[in-house]
Image 1 (cartoon, helix red, strand yellow):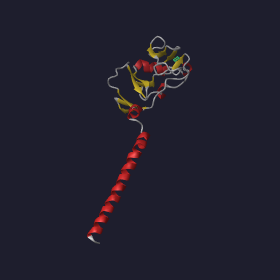
Image 2: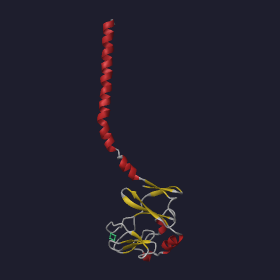
Image 3: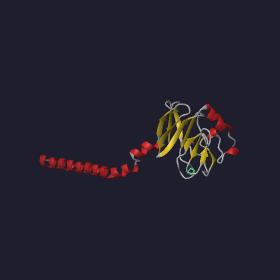
Image 4: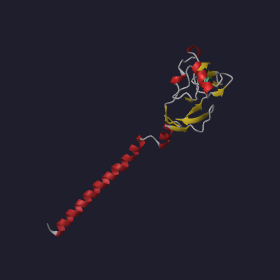
Length: 173
Ligand code: FES
C-alpha cells in the first residue's frame, strides 16, 4: 500500500468511526426526552413516600403530614385512648374492624385525615367522642382508631401503607 492510499484509508476509517459515533450520540440525545418522560418526576417521587420521625410527638399529640397530597395524621395515643378503642364492641361500629388491625403498634395511629363521606377534614373532638374526631360538614363522628361511629360517613378513615423503619421513624407509602 502506497503512503497516499494508506492515508486515504485511515481518513475513511476515521470518518466512518466519527459518523457512527455521532449517530450514536444523536440517538441518545433523541431518546433521552422519551426515556426521561417515562420516569416519575422528582416531585412525584418525593411525594411517593414520607418519613416521619416519631420522637418529637408527645403522648396524646397528633401531627399532620402530607402524603401523596393527602393530610395524614400520626397520633401518639395515650394508654386510656388505646383501652377505650379496644373495649369498643362491633355493634357500636358502622364499619367493624378491630383496632389491632388498624395499627402496627398500639401507641401509634396513622390514618388519612379525610372524611369518608364527602372528603372534609375532621377535627379532633372530645365532645362528639372522647379522644375521637368530628367531621363538622355533616356530623360524622370517628373514634381514636379512626373508625366511623355515627353520621353519614360509611367507612373508617383509611390507613395508608406504612412501616416502622425503626422505633422512632416510620415511612408512609
Ligand atoms: S364530609 Fe364528613 S360528614 Fe360529610
